[in-house]
Image (cartoon, rainbow, N blue to C red):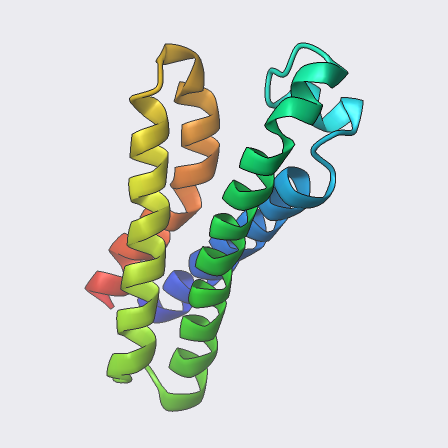
Length: 129
């Protein structure tokens, strides 16, 4: 049961990070997207596009790592060291990124909580399972 919950939360974390990738790397200069990230205007969104594009791919790579870990764990079983290790690394990196975001200022507490909750729950459950 704990293993199943770990996989569910890891999957949710992966999906969330794919969504963040889409926002940062694909839709960054759309007004609805840059407003979500607190960007004041189109000029600023255009100026920060290369940074957001790069950052989005970091999120995508973490999502891929978690997704591959989920698949390996499902295929090989909960005793699979490779799947579990990949999940711990990917989810731990997502949690670490959320903690780094918090150090950017109090206004980032909410986005960091959104970004880090699924991975934290998945990480704890993966370790316990």
